[in-house]
Length: 85
Image (cartoon, rainbow, N blue to C red; front, side, top):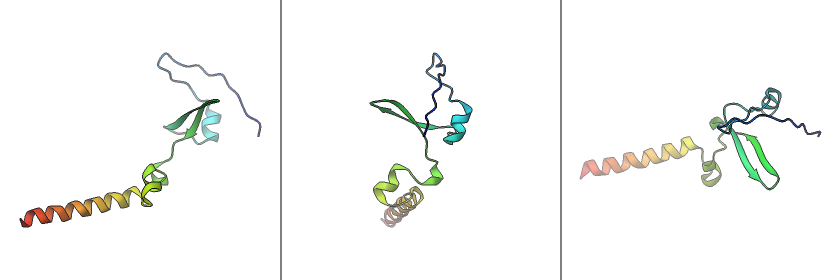
């Protein structure tokens, strides 16, 4: 694959403009993940919440919704126990 190179300006606030054709090709939207590597900065598309690629899924083998539902269920059980006291 032939790599493309572009020189872009960087504002005094550290903002750089990513050319439209590159944003479209790599599906970059409002957010991107930037990684500091030995060879330089690597820009990657940020996962969308609906993709369920968050850090919790790999740790718990559950989606964020399932984890939240479980936590709320435990909270309701604790509240019920306290009410009975």
